Length: 176
Image 1: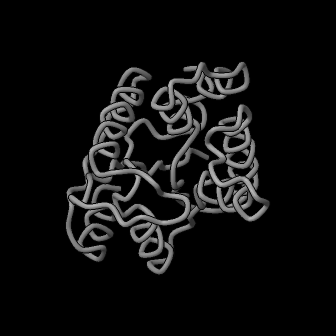
Image 2 (image 1 turned 135 degrees about the horizontal axis):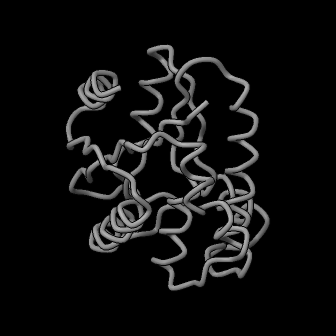
């Protein structure tokens, strides 16, 4: 099985697109960062991204979800991948852990993921949430780091331009 990655900067509409893909009958795997943030915030840590184990906690949950999804039939869409986690660590100015380096090694990436990544372009605004405390300018900067990280690792980015969720889901289904 090879996973189809759906990625993009925070607030680019990935979750809405994922819901639409799921409603269209596709298998989907939720992203991990929001859940790690929500859990830690519920336990009193208001800024979990400042904790030294934050990136590895995201990676661990991401990998567990992928392992569980490996048993699914048909195309499986991932809302983010370990490459996104590597981009996040770079954006935060953190050195990648040994585990993150292992999960993003070229041979591992090639065996798990389709080489074309569906990359949701920003919507031009950010809706803040308890987990998403990023400005539009920061999201655009993260978008650049994100794209560079995927391209550096040999992925081809297929842009999904801003638009309605329904139009974007139709475009994704046509691309795959």
